[in-house]
Image (cartoon, rainbow, N blue to C red; front, side, top):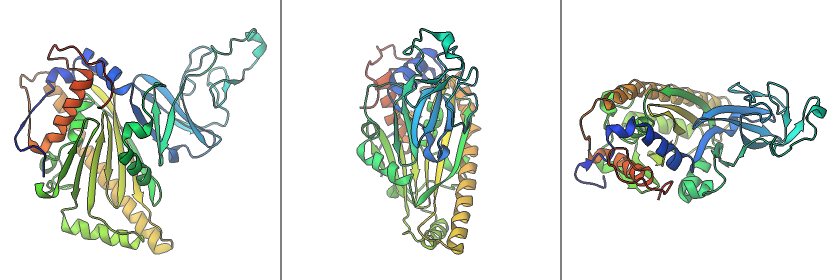
Length: 379
């Protein structure tokens, strides 16, 4: 059952989705203190493997150095060149693409071509910016500040445990996906927090939302969670059949969890999905998705065939659902620029109301004229 029994106020207004000062306040007070999911360990499994990305206007490089994952600002202190412009790759020599300066795991210079030209050498000025890194199962998290909570504290003990178990055997990496979205980051976050759009946007892939009596919402300042069960009998039977043949115990449970500000987790017995929506401007963001699918504990040709079938089904279905949502986001953003309405939230959308409370409490809003809170992060 839902927590509320009457409609709720739409706490954020259209200005909060387009205003540059609101965007800057959210970046500084919600995102800079947060931990950010940037990659999976399986994307950089070997020494020298790297993954690059933009994170809040900063070029970041996550790199495997002798089996340990490190994260750096992807900028060479010599002449400010990007260390590597490739999105991913392998280079056992951690070096700049421009002049070949090489670096250690601590970000210090290891080798400089014709080093005598730089005597006396300013070693501290030549050190890479390095960021804190923590792993949770296969997932790599980076923080852009040294202070603040650990990843376990940020996610909460229970959810940290869930992620660690979900992105580890018997679940294996199946698919990584990225998309640029022409909408404020809060638009796709709110979409993933509500089931109300399902019959219109996903009539064939998801059909209808589950009956209210099978749904539980947990709401807090740090996160919200939806728990329900698979309510399509034929799908439930197919999933159970596949799970048993992979040597695991079927479960009808479905969990959708959102850790504020932008980390989303979806879990069923057949797959685990993590996604983030990273703001890139007041009216754009980037979506990143990691899908792990059940491999199971059984070996042999039948089990391998079942695992391959499940992987194909999970990837194709997930891709289709995500691409069904994509056209809606710029249309909603376009409406934000012209809307005179306050907005309204139904009880089925109550997780959005909790998300609005979090944004307003920790970043303030552009429309109400109140002083912005100086507190960062969730309560």
